[in-house]
Image (cartoon, rainbow, N blue to C red; front, side):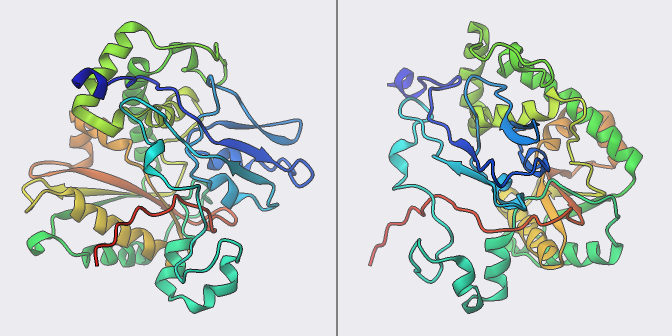
Length: 346
């Protein structure tokens, strides 16, 4: 039973979503390339294309490429589905993705047709997208204080308020943190990815597979880290490490580290998640862009010198990081998401 439960852990066979392009509309601006968190796109002959780095197109279906395209030329078809093994999920979903339907509207109606019937909070929630395209303009400290204040008033278990914030606007320091992150993450990529895929600018064998020792390692990792060993996570990590020009924080002018008092009542994950989401929604309501960058957490955990440089010490530990900045062009927009799993007990 145990072997069956942990079968097909390493790079399981899956059905992936596909990038779809209207060539008539595409002007080759490259915004979709910059917005892709797994760096699966490129501009070729003035048109967006899959760069076919891996054996298949490993799309996360986040649809940020759809949201940032000013020409409406980009689409994503299909969903990520694993039919069997440890990561089996095909049986967990009912139908495909749909646009927001808070008022029970049919799929055929446009969000804009009933947007005015929603509260301002609802509109921010549905339109907010993770932003990876930033202007160089620095964020005003007054806006950052407003964003942190929104986080400060998040609910927490026993009102223990376990948070602490480190705001980094020093660009030299951000470059140093970026270098350390790429160095640490490359180590994990070498453990978990076919080595033929580790260099973006030198595409390797698309049919490459993991070595036996990598499969054995992943089997053990899943037992301890769970979803962090998902093959979609490998693609995200490899995006950062395989391209020397890729910046862990997307060259955003401001990064906020969220620290948590590890003695917090009931643990820190839920409290810090609520706090961070308050901050993200506040940022977007103020016209700023933001993105969670959790990849920094592994670097800080394993890098004592970096922890000292950033002033992270007991009883605090890194929870996550948010990047902030002024969006470069239109970022927010409506996308589709999986249908909710609901069981009514009346």
